[in-house]
Every structure is written in structure tokens, then in C-alpha cells.
Length: 246
Ligand code: MN
View (cartoon, rainbow, N blue to C red):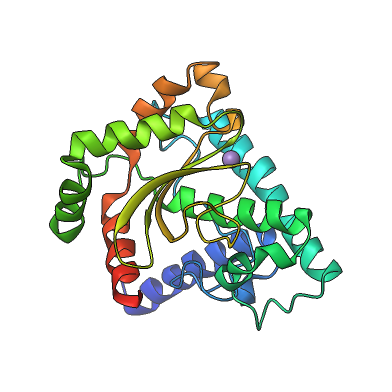
């Protein structure tokens, strides 16, 4: 193949992809694909894998409804709340908004949390990841919880014990230590109203919409299956960032 042909094919491939992205995400120009959760990340980002990619642990229909209906609604309602409450999304980072969430409406709290939590949740899963963390994160988990298995038990218990809808978290507190917590509804550890505050490095959605089609009332089975999807490379990266900026 000549270079010209190759360039043309590359051009078609690139613009073709952009065309799809523009149709799905109208404010593409504001997206920065390489800066996840930066100051302007108020928009729903493309899912980093297909709806069926996490099968059999999470089924395709759950992923599609979760992403296109539930999470999309949080992003839209967040945009509406920002207009209504005069938040300049170019000047106020989403994490800064969350850290001051007590100054905003319940609608802002639910949807800013809902948007942030889901964007994190998608990124923190991947098909066929490594089965455990390594390096400094692995050491910190062992030091804090006794062992990796003991951490999984502690985290799983927090996720199972969350009554109704909410999330389980592994977070880095302001002193750099690790903690497990859970929050109701769409709250998260960044929020100034959170009981246990810090930077979340793992978040698990335990709303029924995240698992009901496949697991019905069996939340523990969903939690056990979700461990097969944890993107430990990203968790490690987020841990390093959190202890560096503490
Ligand atoms: Mn959800």
C-alpha cells in the first residue's frame, strides 16, 4: 500500500470515529480524553469498552441501560443544575464542586455525585484485568487490612451492608492512609458532607440498577463477580496521585 492510501485510510478511520463521537456527545470540543476527571469533566465520556465487554460478570443489557439511561441522566441533570445554580463549569472543577456540595441544592448533590461516581466506575473496570494490585498499593492494603483477602472481605461487607442504594469505596484520607467506607444514594467521599472523607480510588455501585437484571436480589453474587473486573493498574495510578497530592 502506498503512503497516500495509508494516509487516506487513517484519515477516514480518524474522522469516522470523530463523527460517531460528535453524534453521541455534542460538546466534543470540551472533551479532553487524556485528562479523566479534569476541571471540565461535566460531560458524559465515551464508555472505554463495549456493553458486552464485561460479560459474564456484568451483562450487556445492564451495561447499556446503566450507561445510556441512568448515567446519561445524571450528566444531563448536572448540566441543568449548573445552569440553574450559576456554576461556571469552565472555572469550577467537578471535584471542587463536590468538596463544597453542602452549599448547593439536593439536585446538584445527587447529580454531581451521580455523574462523577459513574465516570469513575466505568474507568475502574476492564475486561480480564490483573487479579490483584502490586507495588505500593498492595503494601498499603496489606498494612491497613492485614491481607488482600481481608481487604476484599472488609470492602465486600461495606458494600453488602449499604441499606438501599449507594456505593462502597476505597479511599485515601488526607493523612495518606487507606479506608473503606460506604455512602448513601450518589454521595461520595469527596463531598464535605461525607462521614469518611478523602480521594476515592475504588468505587462500587450497589444500586439495584447496577445488577438487578442478572443477579436480582443477590447483591453478594454481583460483588463477588465485580472483583473479576477491577482495573488495578488505574487504582494504583490513582493511589499514587492521591498520596502525592495529599
Ligand atoms: Mn449506577
